[in-house]
Length: 313
Image (cartoon, rainbow, N blue to C red):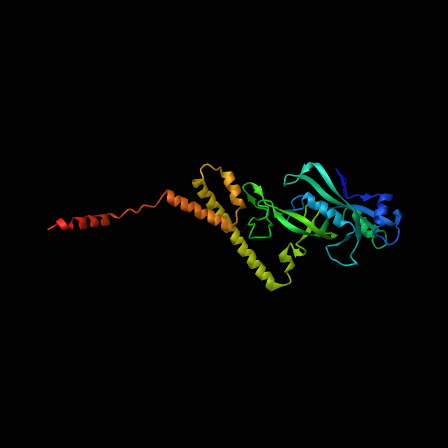
């Protein structure tokens, strides 16, 4: 795997001896430069995508090794007939002067692909060179989706209660896709998930990222999933109100702690921890400002009459 500073994208490549040597690792016969068409693709990057997820630089390096030899297909339809090209080399390209929304240096995984020139793929080659076939998406597997706020796996709702795309204490929430375990394929698509590349992710060895799309042909399960989604939305609203209550009470009980620090702490707490902290604050306030019962005037008069009754004739 090569690492370079910057490389142009999307242009046909001149097939050199080094390229042929790498290409012929995947071919049953030795191909010549005239027999192959080579081009470069931007597979994925470390920018936050439309799903609120991204590949950190370390994951891109792991994927670089796994994408060598993988086939290119269309719209993620897996079939031998649909295989159009194969990646023979990869590299992670770093752009020193470009920052991501996460604040780190922008980098992307670049793949070098080849096709054997045939009568059947002349049209595809023309579409690639003409810029019609330009959007690429990848299918891969990762171990974890790490929350940018609390550092837990964002899919484990017992440990992480944050929502991708929301802002907590001035910090944007997204998921870092960590621990690449497999690369399945790359595909020409109409609209990718990543603005610059496009990504279809599979977590933990096969779980679909888009559950509703996965269940669209199973109405019973789809209805249940929608119900759970609505309940989860209500739960998120409750957590937001609970955080607000904790911050309000904390402002009274923790005079020496600045608001942004209290917000940062509250954003990392689970629902149970927030409830416990709220109850603790309420107990402290009750101890500090105990409730006093003021008797109504007629009750006070009745007690005075009772005390003086022994002296009345």
